Amino acid sequence: MAELVVNGIKKAFGETAVLHGVDIEVPDGEFAVLVGPSGCGKSTLLRLIAGLESSDDGKILFAGKDVTDTSPRERDIAMVFQSYALYPHLTVRRNLAFGLELRRTDKAEIARRIDEVAEMLGLGPLLDRMPKQLSGGQRQRVAMGRAIVRRPALFLFDEPLSNLDAALRGQVRVEIKRLHARLGATIVYVTHDQVEAMTLADRLFVLNGGHVEQSGTPMEVYEHPRTKFVASFLGMPGMNFLDATVSEEDGQWWAAGQGFRLALSPKLLGAAPEPGAATIGVRPHDVALGDGDGAFQLHVDVAETLGTESFAHGSAGGAPFVARLDGDVRPAPGETLDLEVPAAKVHVFDKESGRAWSADR
Image (cartoon, rainbow, N blue to C red; front, top):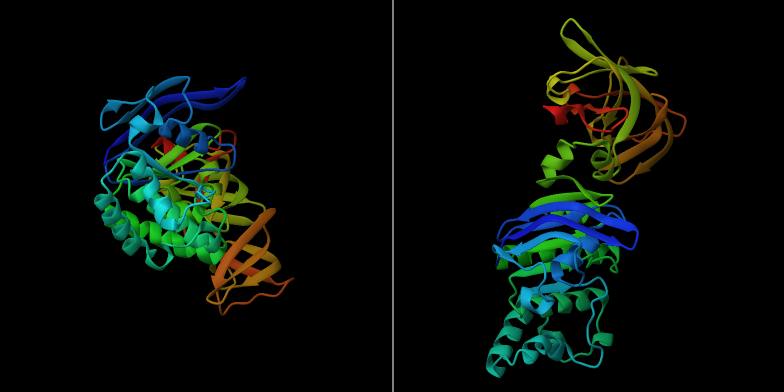
C-alpha cells in the first residue's frame, strides 16, 4: 500500500475553477473520505488522483513518488465506480480475471486470487453468472472484487453506493468497512452521503467550493466544526441555527435572542471572545426536555416517531428548529415544548464569516 499526498492541486474547466489549491494527506492503510455537496469538487479530485484528469497546478505523490504526470496504469490504483462498469458479455469470473489477463498474470495465480476474493465477498455461487443476472448489491460486490484481485497500492471509490436502495447501502457499507479491516488497504472514498462518511472514515475531508473546509476524524469534525458550513452539512437532522447577541456577566458568557437565553462554554468561544452579534448552533440530539423553566420553547408543527426516538419540527428563537426526543415522548402538532441545552453543546459562529469562534483558539 502507499501514502497519498495531494499538494496544492488546482483544476479549472474553461473559465470555471473547480479546485483551488487543495491539500490532503492520507497515511498508508488509512480510510479517507472526501465528503461534500454536489459540485464541491470531490469527484474531480478523485479523478485527478486516478490520473483520469490532468491538474493545472500542484503535485500528487504516492509513497513519496511524484505521479502528477503519469498515466493511470503507472499509478497502481484500482477504482470502483458508481455505475459498476462491469463487462455485460463476460461472466463474473471473467470480469474478475480481465485486468489480470491483460497483465499476463499466470493462470494459476489468477484462479487463486479469484477464489480468494470470491470467499472474501461471498461471490462463489455467482462466478458463472452474467451481470444481468445479478442484483445491484451483487454487482457492486463484483466491482469491488475486480479491484481487490489486482492488489493495487491505492483503492479509489467514487460514490459506489448511490445506485443501491437504503437497505443495500447499509449492507454494502458494512462489507466495505470489513474489507478495509481485512486488507489494511489505503482507500480514498468519495460520497455526498454523510452517514457513509461518518461510519466509514478514519479521516474526513469536508469539501466546499473547491476547498477543504475541514479535516479530521469523524467525531472531531462533528463535535468541533470550524465553520457554519461544516456544522450544517454533518449531522442528521442538520444543526439548528439561531441569531443571538453574546454577552458576559460576572465571568459567565451568554447568548440571548428571541425568546431564549443560553449559557455558553469558554471552550467553544475562542481565546478572546468579544460581545456582539453571532449565530449560535444547536444539534437536535443535544437538546433535552426542561422542567418548565428551560432555556427556550419549541412550538411544534410536525412530529416524526422512529421507534426509539422522535423528532419534533417547529420553530424556536425566531427560526426553524428540530429537537430529538426519546421515543416515548410524542408531541402533538400545536404543542409547546420546554427545552434545555448544556452550555458545552452550544456552538458559536461569526455572523459574517460563518467561522466558529473556537477556531481562533
